[in-house]
Image (cartoon, rainbow, N blue to C red):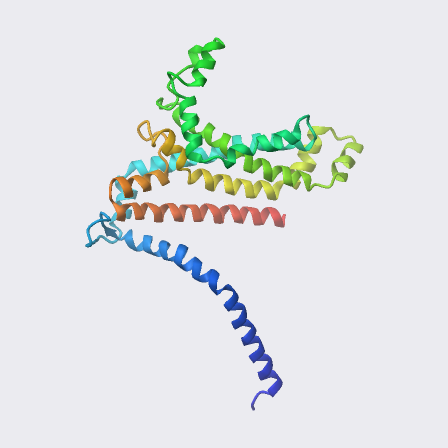
Length: 304
């Protein structure tokens, strides 16, 4: 039995609406396909070849590049380990400092309006400029850090900060934290401003002190923001490149080498385009897994 005319007309209107909506998002789809999807697929394709990026011919090697990375390339895993250290230091130190400073500013400490500007200034500076300035600060001969230690009677702590295997990674991490904590500070300050003042006041009326109010009222309400900031901090630390390039070049040895720097070196210095593409695929999948894992944790927190 044929469908009634009103039902057919309703379906036709729905189809037209869907087609019209698709036309609105078509430019975004095209831009994504050209600037994101195509480079991703090209990288995956190149990872299956041996190619120097110059000669027109490419040698098909299949999964050989991936096999070499997983079995014969300890430098890649050193770079991944360094990136993990940068991420852990960023999450623990940077978030703690930015949350503490945001809490003080939110409570109206003297000069809070001034601090709102000063704390954010490092984030708007070029990472390369920041790297070269801090490289001079760490310089063992003319750097201000060793000079300050000598003038305060702590000369025994002076060292070649960026040339010492035991301190290079932490010196670069300190620079990264200094230059990036302004973002976390802004996130936390905005979240603190969004907490209804009646909640801390009610807790104080019930006899809670400042620490108890922070622990049982403020921090639980900041949990969604903490999740977002943690994701951004980890992803930023894993992809750190300009500071490394400006300050150490990945050295001494591989003490500060990170995955993005390894990809850059293999591609533009070693001319191993296929191998660098395999690096990129592994690194991209790692970042995707980390992001999905963190989003899953965030969902559970929100549901709880």
